[in-house]
Length: 216
Length: 372
Image (cartoon, rainbow over the protein chains, first blue to last red):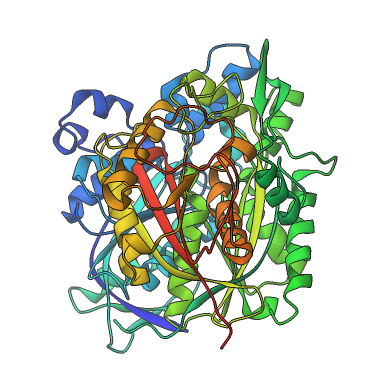
């Protein structure tokens, strides 16, 4: 069971600590909305803007969810402090998807996948199946683990505490030019490895067509 | 595009506050007894009405028990040829909560245990399923998993899919909904003018879907998915997204609105959802279908509600009976048909809604299956 995806565009962003050039003021003009954005939402919006596609259906993934907001809620409960309503509404895994929908006025199919180290593989699978229905899709995976209070989460060798990747894809009937090998990328969250492998191939291909075979 | 296969909901195994299996849950619904109980220990200094599963078993033990129960009902289902689709908003969060509240730090937290993926890993390891994939879209999580299962089967990519909707009561969720001002401090009253919020609940629903008919199955005829593009917590005021999802589901099912006998509404009991969902249903369906929220009995099982309510909808179709509306005295919208008692009638088509944080909307159309 294999579906081939043609890669139409890609974008990446990464930083050892915290991405600082995400162009939030340009991408999100509403100041109140901008102030509420989570780290994952900021990266997802930046990548969507880089690709220039706010209207395609979206499959977005993250391995850990909104870690900062989630642990802030736990800390507040433990300290008998009041939980912030904004932290709670921003703590769900589909927060970046929601902000993408609102900012891009995208009213179509948007979903969120979370499969820890398998996240980008799962995003590609959902994207491949949905490419049989929709003309183009945007696939995004982001993870942000740059939080001093949860340093314990960062014992797995991830040196890039913020990284995100995006692909614009469509279904292809042509023969695949690549299959995923399961290549590892030191320092990057394993949640994005599968999509990084495609992006590496895109860079190497120097503009020639990349069609990736996705095993469902 | 021509679809290769139809999709059947062949069997289900569920547990929630209203019962330890689907038969018990459905009986509780027909009796109209709210299963919500007062619980302390979730919000400091407050007793909260919540939907807690009446079992001493650990949540993950209940998960395994329900998958095992499903597999005994479906001897034809081969796990090694089946993909598991999980829908959950909480995942293993309660494990992280317990560790943190015991140890006051995060040192022993492992990402494998706290992640959404924890549910899939558990059942794949225990039962040998071919693979798994986890959706986390707040309260639409397991509905959107059903939508993806529908694609996998109609496109001929899988013959059998297991969908799991599972969410455990967590202090984070209960406190969060309370702080947002949408957690009721009394038993929830969906669609009533006096409604004042949700009762957060826990639940597990494990569904077997396939391309083959079996005894007592129903057909999943169509799914609709839309986004409000409006607000993180408040639905679109004109219900645009909700109506788009319902219309898409009807279109995919190939039936018109007048064919729907029963709408299993999202019906959370919040001021905003029930008013907007009522108005949207009235616009699309008029007075014809019966409209019920089973959350008055089960509570709101968050990411599990789509799968749980698909099973409840299937029970209505199989047994030709629609539950009554518990705790409803004066409807917010007098134009809708809210039965106050169970209605025994031919139930051929049911539409089941799930709407969630972030403005996601999913509607499913389920239909009766007749013997060949």
